[in-house]
Image (cartoon, rainbow, N blue to C red; front, side, top):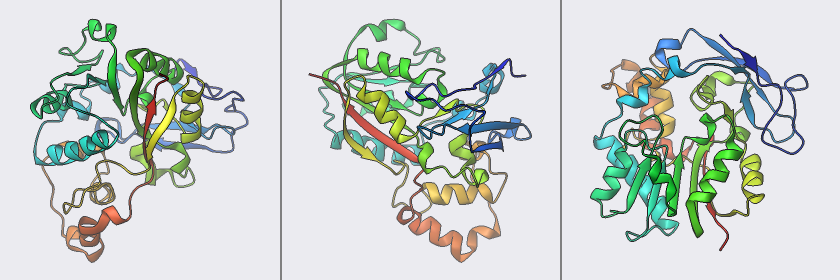
Length: 293
């Protein structure tokens, strides 16, 4: 049960409020255990970010969270290689100290170390193996923050911490949904980007850039497509969303053995499996920020 409501935006200088929001919609949870529950989101009229209305105790929702079932397999390696290519294009070298902030069980950190990035570390307050706060007493050349900032109550405070963890001239890589690319007139199409009630604030690109700018962070590069888009048949976000929609459209499907349906043989499904990357989903963004020298 909600104990309070988020009545105003905490991301911009001229915050919009729930009362004056033009876009207020209800959407179901995309995790199977809670799929029958519905949640309200609203968009700030100024920065266009999207906020979850109700302040909830999320501990019961994170119990048995599907991402906890993630493990290393062919698909995970394929997607991780695509992610690493982005980091390398931004300048990551094996000699750099890298922090995966919000690393979960540490799969990415362990994989990077196996690839020669032996100075990679991870921290996650909710992971038994990566909760050592001493990791946050160091400074890093690279700090990667994938699918974290939208989960926290105060994104500005997280940016302050990330900046303090990064060496002068270092890079912060933030991957998160982009509220500007989410059409709330068709919320069911964006159930996975909205990911209620887990995504507390879905930032617009404008809001994220503004928060970074006030901290002296400069945008080095920006992607408006998901790193999970590959040319391997069936491994792209557009096909993944289509596949999920053929069943119960929950996040759980991504961490379960593949299911079969005759509808996977339709021409449209085959086209998406082979060429879905050519129609990328734009509701994800990755920005690389350079800290002041």
